[in-house]
Length: 264
Image (cartoon, rainbow, N blue to C red; front, side):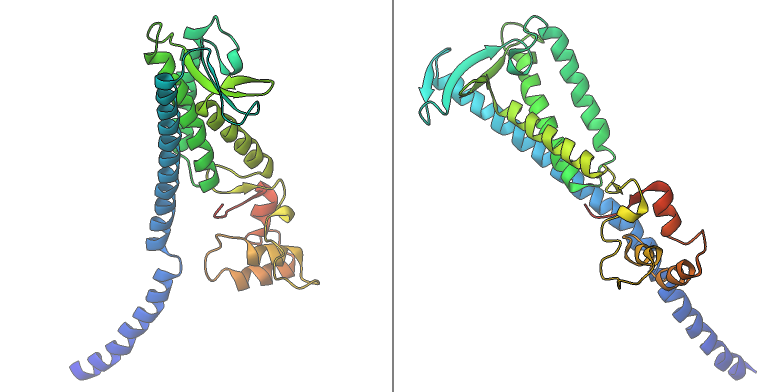
């Protein structure tokens, strides 16, 4: 009896292992928990490094100019195209609001806090770069306002880059402008902080029709090519889409929410 039980039990155990093994790997409970966390850490790393580099370049360049250029002095670098001109700005960018230094300092602190709060949801490398530039530039000018003369929280920002017919600015201003341009572009393209893309409708999802035959159903193509689909859903989703079911995986969600997951 023991021999029979052993021989009968062995196939059952091996069969359970084969059925559970692929199932445990296919949904990716281990990888699903590791992937998003690793990507979030990568995005936060890019965010932090970008902000630190922007801040370091801005602070170092200001200290070099302060040590070598007199206030109001103009040093040609590329003739009249680019000059070094040391000025002290008590207002916002481009010398706007010179009489509201303290108010602008408080606004800058609020901007830094808002950027840090948004960064908690980062899953997109382009957005990590964008927010890093914005944070580095904002902190660069905020350091001037808090620590430079004439008084704490009312300090004047050091500007030193002069272009023809353009107000004098610094590298922090450049980082803020570049970050702002990137933010507008990413928002226009529908890229979200969490790495998804808001397309407005499912038919506009990137890559929805890549590799599909010309006569394939649009819902079948979206269901097969939509990023982030769990393994094993493809054939079922395709058959359901061909049958015209309203609850087809990937199709209904794409049309209803207008979002697709991705690695952008």
